[in-house]
Length: 303
Image 1: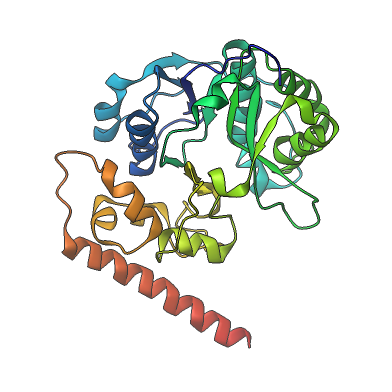
Image 2 (image 1 turned 90 degrees about the vertical axis):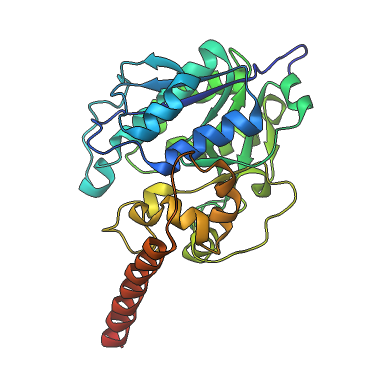
């Protein structure tokens, strides 16, 4: 690590690269509020192109430094072969923007589907760059997830990564964003401090662990500082290949009454002046039960 390096106690979030047609969601509110209350940052910089709206946004907005950005990157005009992957262009654009922000200013970048549990160690502030291991995709030796990156301004690892990112971009989810930093860390271990999977990604992206997050309670390892929620795999109610849970079921009623790992840790950051209803929660449980029944019927028909 570089001597005298200092990671500012400033958090950066990127959001609103697409037009905001729905009110600011509870999951995103909980991310920001848990950051403010647990991490006690000097500032939270909210980088956006389309500003969010809705009651929860009105609640959290005064606590943020709002910074409008132009989402132009080397892959803004990339022609995807897969239409499903193309729907996540905004996420790939954010992969570039986060490094540009950290190189220019330093601080801690986190995805908006994060939940903060306890403060990071103070001695991390003297490091140059910090990332965490994640469960790698099939066939990969290892992966460093870019959902959380702490870096000093001008961090050498981030500069090296950004310099190679456009060439590594192939339209896939991981090659430029998580596999490339792993390869660079293997080649230049002196430039980065790597945390174990338990620090930020204790519940990985597999269906069983997503169920541990949202549908039942599971133990959390002691080193866990934050949780990543892998929202792109389950948030859309039309997607069922990773989880039957979806964003429409993540409500204040769910937070108040669900026996799940996420609800247990997130309910401390419940928005004020929202009264949860057990009746509404039971109605949401019925929706989930219906999804499970239909899934089981489909599986039985396949057999």
